[in-house]
Length: 473
Image (cartoon, rainbow, N blue to C red; front, side):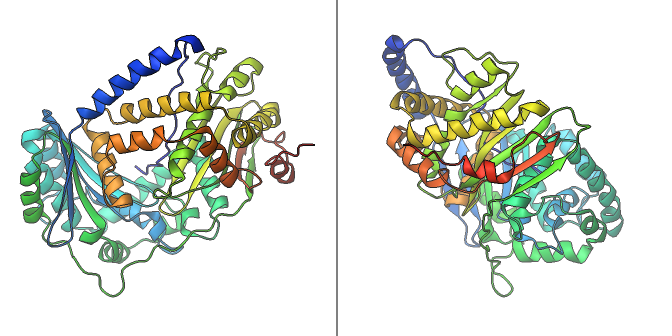
């Protein structure tokens, strides 16, 4: 299943009155520091063939182990767009020594879960199992990425499966809006393509296309074996040397280069009055994973937050936009997002509203953005930093999200950033940092807009663009 990696604030917290904030803050800080001390270290070993093995051993009874590959739809072109996701499907259709049935039975008999997903920059295969079954899980993962049969009959059968998946994605309007947002923001570049690819490509992809993609991208310098839970690092290193020995270390010719993907301020509207609600996303160009502005943008993203009608929104709500949305019935839900890629990103907000509320909701969104650029206070930033640190720990609850965090960070940073370092980076953000970074990325910038549904009430692009700055007399 294709995965859109969308980092959003998952919850909003009502805080007590200002007089009690200092006592509460110091208690939370002490608890947070104790939590960080108890986090096991991440151990990394690079094998002779270039494969990186990264683990976090918590001594749990279960473990998640997976292969994170630096290859996704961004490395495709117009002719083979969709091949990375197609390969993800083919991985479980049998290998040279296991039929599809044998593979499924083996995994089921272990009581394990085998899964995979494709994003715009990464392809992932992982297994969640009991700690004692980690050697078998590594052997299975090594088998499926090195020895997949890619049989012609399986390829033909998988075409119809992927086409049905495309129909399911098209019925999910949030997925549709974000695909349109990428298509307009990164038009004419690989990031503008969808992960699943166009229908004509799915119908024409051949076995040779799949093999060519594997030969071009599945090389050990671009692969990380990540594990979390009850895993012994030294044993996993030995397993990697044994089970992943067939992976190539060198490239035939020049290694694939990551071409820059320019951002274009633009819009796409798909008006359909038969849809009951309007689904709208607006974003500016953000920064890449390694940019120093990423943490202040994460804090700004948390300041906007997320909200839907099932939540209350009192006067102490951390997000001013949530308060306005609830008081004035501006929308059904909204969520701020900070989607990062290696050298670029999308920072913005997605909301769902009644047909005639598009203009009012967008006005409030852009007013809040301008407030972040000019008037955000230290109190708000302090509260957002606490919320961000809490969410940071909540998102790492379980072996699978930890394993995913290790794999992703190893590909993005070539190391796992310790939680105490990330905490220090968040703590160092001030209101002035947030204002400066928002001025840099938001103020007077051309946004990308994607809207689907009854969007007649949405202002035209010139008006939207003119609201990206304030003139003060």
